[in-house]
Length: 310
Ligand code: ADP
Picture 1: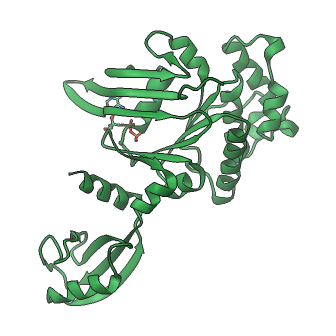
Picture 2 (picture 1 turned 180 degrees about the horizontal axis):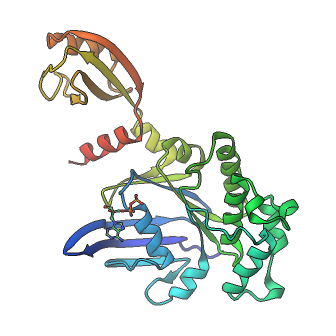
Picture 3 (picture 1 turned 90 degrees about the vertical axis):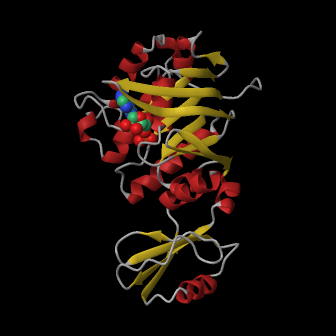
């Protein structure tokens, strides 16, 4: 295997223009995905994740920038780019009257894979669908349907698999199962890129994580380094309503106001102690009715990273 990145993204931008309304969905994005890694692309709704995937898939045209997929330039070699990636969509779009075997054969035909090069049986095996090969798709469970989508994306043997929110709407047990499948695919050498808005999921699976927010890449790191950086906690205080104690605590932490009577503070466990924060809030002469601490969720992490940026 030659030593080029699986994907190279340089100065990628996308602006949608609809009825005179312009939306900058991606703003000067730069990053590489290495061969053989599991790479997570995280971001809240509207961050630009689908736009990114659709550009790779060829269904959205980029505004600016250069993209190489498996060393093929998207502008010069769009067909080679397309054959280097398999995309597993979020929506289940299977013809209910075909069997997995038939669906895979049709898909292989669409990609022009000659019969002798088809690996239908192997794919059914990898996705654990061998014993459902001849069952109607409509009779498959939710988890099996997801696996069949993965199987479809593999028929042309792409070195890169892109999964768009693979576990959206999937229950906990199936989710675990699906994550294991993804790991197995990676073990046989497939580079994996997945989008998600669950930090936990990316955390358990990805070698590296990129975070995009508002079309901008705001973080990219090895998972463990990123988690270290964002080891944030959130403490919320229920106070007497309409309390306004300013924008910041004495130690510089920002005070967020949510509902009328809730204020919250996001802090890094490494830098601050809960006792210190409580006493600083008390110093503001505010009447505290209740205190709740929790691990910051992804939204908070975005908030923090975006703030740090400025
Ligand atoms: P995500 O997948 O992270 O939720 P999207 O890529 O779907 O984000 O959207 C990024 C931004 O681009 C959003 O503001 C969205 O409204 C806008 N957008 C997405 N698709 C289109 C489109 N076809 N036309 C106009 N704006 C779009």
